[in-house]
Image 1 (tube, helix red, strand yellow):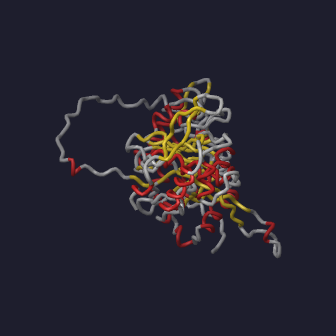
Image 2 (spheres, one colour; image 1 turned 180 degrees about the horizontal axis):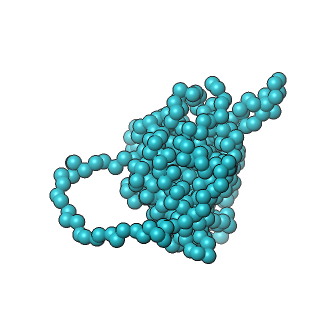
Image 3 (tube, rainbow, N blue to C red; image 1 turned 45 degrees about the vertical axis):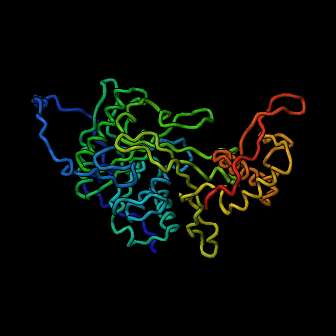
Length: 421
């Protein structure tokens, strides 16, 4: 596998935006070229057979769709750029790399407006190495630009007001069409404009620019956006930084949250900081996903680019991989449930409260050959008990403790022999 820099075959028009040439000023319509007066009239709706209506062109799951913009919202340092790079390679190869099957094989243009090209090469090549891809898998379908070399700012706000960079927009559109690009990823959104983040009208204008590019070029546009600080609380799409106009314009939005230390302990994860969760926060064109949240883990991939004989001193890069939460019912059988019920019947009364000395989870853990004082085993027992209470195998009842105070206790419910295979 060759580790060559990515080519910048994006057309001479876009090359002109590089540092070797002065950046063209942002401007609106020229005063001597007033827009033509639009003709507004009502269009009569013509009956059409529903089966003849073109199907929506989803490209990746229910997040990216042609002719619309989508948004990914995340706090910094979680892995949003690594996620969209892995998704880009999924779409370029047409393979399900991280748990979402692309609806075909597509061309993707990834514009990272913060990192230098050599850092983008590290991330893309680390992802390719991890998933055992080679040059033929990319096959000229991946385009990568760095904001350090190619400035992409579509609007600016100054004393004169809001100015739209029409030359920049036209060159982006021409590049997408000439390369037949299916997906454009802008990372991050904030670097694609120079307007106030809190100005709803200005942000709406910028989002409209990207929406019109998506519509005109028939491509999907992904806008990666920062979340505001939430004081340690979980982030929702409503916590996206700045004005809400971006989310109003997007047809699908999702949010990333890191695994908390407490959640890591509950799941028995040694390094929770390497894990994050993706939740859909808005889906105007599709019902909410039935599979719920998706979890991912960052795997460290060495590039092998260290000095000769000292390859271990080279760079290691985090690559996004799919991750499944531990299943408390893994390897648990009907016989285990019967043993748990027998253990609970043999003693008691058993408290529902996990902090109680006579917690019901203790006899259940011993019956399943687990250690109730081990964090991972205790969480497994708690998960099993919640599920078994939900199915009536155990029931919560109110009783009196030794101080004659009402407390919740757990007793055996339906006999396990009533459970099907």
